[in-house]
Length: 286
Image 1 (tube, rainbow, N blue to C red):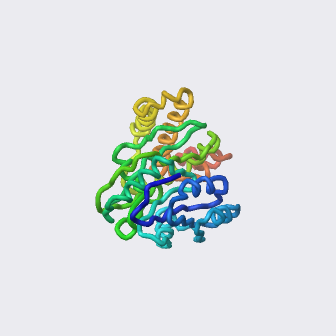
Image 2 (image 1 turned 30 degrees about the vertical axis):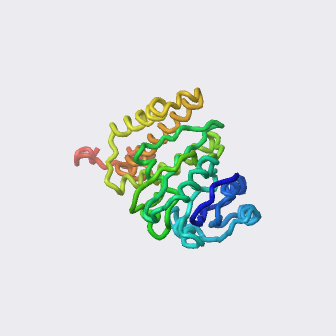
Image 3 (image 1 turned 120 degrees about the horizontal axis):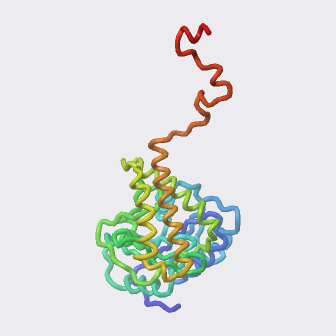
């Protein structure tokens, strides 16, 4: 792909762990980068070998958490302007052209550039489901000396930008090819962490919240974001997102109201009735 020349060098940052299915596709989508840096957290497959074979610089680092791992990778880059992408993401030609055009112009180091990231579901491309404010926080291109990942964010990590947030055109394609069987444990795992974050922020789970949040999530995906245009796929996906929302708030309620009980109450154990104390001295004498 022929792109406009950039006035500034760029490092592309990719985190990996056992991603031999996707790493070649990811690295292959950024052949125009001045550096592709892969930080691997202990792959046991051919991820590192494939990445090196495609010209990437590969480092190894035991997992530190999402934000901290990104920060470590960024510190190893040769260039100050960095583009962070996931190993299962693809920089489309339109997005690559937008990046090249942005880097031809004068770029203020305090500014960050956000992307239109879209995922797949059962072979179909989904619309971007994020709210506009959340979408503007999807900064992927930034100057590492003026912007950084928020170290407090455990999931859905974001870059703090002190300047303007500028949109890039084109899609950052997040294509994983999950089956429903694979989606469910992912949703469940994220729901646990998100429930903990809500609890720590002081959010209280109520019956109304548990009822309304999944319904609103379904309507947001299926109606407002027009997933109905995807036919049955859209219906299934919106339903799964609603279930994910339900599990998140159900887990929050559990954390706040139902500590784990390993054993039944004494009154439910075998022989409990015979062992129960008499209610009065007269009954004890019978």
